[in-house]
Image (cartoon, rainbow, N blue to C red; front, side):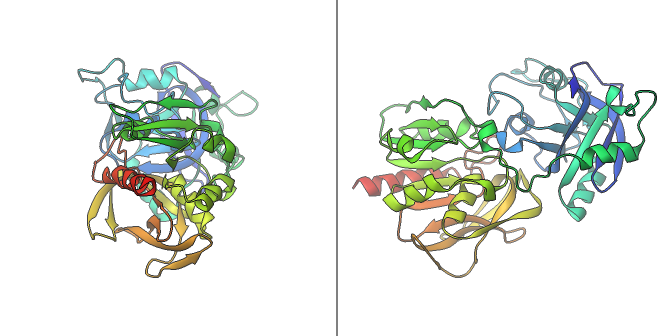
Length: 385
């Protein structure tokens, strides 16, 4: 429930499902919202974060203290709308200043009905989430702070009850809610070299653009695309995108069919988790996840360490130091996070398939992992040869 009015001076309350409460001022739309509380450690790129479909049903806490400095432009959106369920910042910028800025972040949040809160200790909130883990949360302002009778202000116990009534992220099947309803084509830039069928599980706009730069014509298909629909575009390769929700809820029919046929396959983020499950590995929910543009990952085939962009709350449960036998041949962990040894990539040794748990398109973020698109091209070249 939101009312799109400016809430800069309206009191707001954030309530976590364990009862921890923070009081501040409304930022963006006034009303109430619920989701999973997560934190993002990026110092820049808030517009790309807000429009990343992988944040569907999540309330994002920004660890950078000052947010909104560069306003909002018309070029950096990663999808058709803001997907975060709520937004938490410490110090909103009073003035936005950038040559591309078209409006303030506050105005954009109001226009799109995104309820937020400002003026709270985001450092304390982040430390709490690191210690206790990601959890459900509610943000309340305006009429949402009234009790059920409407006669007075709701107490924290009543607000907590509303938070506890919200659905958890575990078991959530969300990809179809954020994916395109109709297929579309992103043409190759320059000479067309390959055709790729990209399954939209929550794809970011920069991803097909990175492939197009390499001469790939990208057919972006809905999350519900069938095997026949995938192969109707005569793909040289298949791409599995990022996306929100619990990978345990996903249908693996298309992934397994691609592996059976030996078509080159590249997955990122949610796509990495689907490949892992298709290979027979499990997935599990991380305590608080990886979200930001400064995560160190090692490519184990080269020893190179990349600074990478992440947004994931689930991970693949695969052995780090042994080659595993799967229904599609041998598989190994190709990339690992140096902070916590979380599996960050998989590679099949007997078929042309690999995946990573992060965002090689890096919008926003470092470009250390751009080579992965070239690795995908090499797989398709090898298959064609």
